[in-house]
Image 1: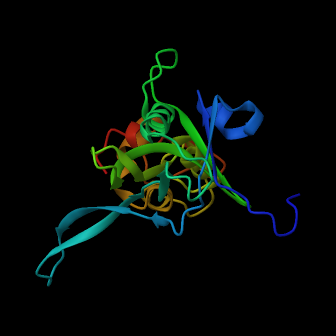
Image 2: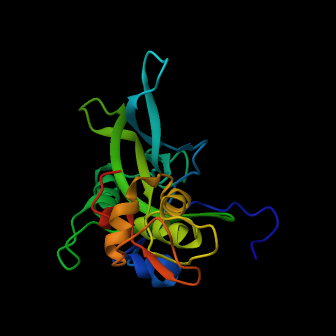
Length: 235
């Protein structure tokens, strides 16, 4: 437990793969970056993907149909300073600090064939994801043009593994395979509408289950409803 009143610095933990990033801590990380000073603010973005369906009767435009919610994104700004005003450690240049920061966050790793996975730790807040953007703004300069201070903006996107786990916890997700036992009164279009949000997949589901007739289902029958991308029908 942190000492009362002790300043907790933001940490960026870098991992070679998603499994280590999922369960690993500071001692397990391939590399660790500590913020010089904590960000004054951060931004969290949520984006929802829609597709345009056919124009509804009596309307002048197309309807927006929900497809999926994209992984959340979080943006921070990190300060680099070599004047010594902040940490009491003046340096000749911030070039080495910036170089290391870039190497850790965006460098392609030959052993894993991809950049690293990250876990952001700040107090009780934890965010796991990948770096999607990094931009550097240089602020102060020596007379010869050597930068004295820079602000680096980094955007992280929540990891795919996080989204897969969320989908697994959502038992009604259309991106998972479902097994349903037929009850009295069930019809294939009705079940498809419940699982996929659209009854149009019933013929393909009937084919997957080897049904010759779909209008009258036998109660107690187990039916398989595959993920949307395996039904053979475009959403």
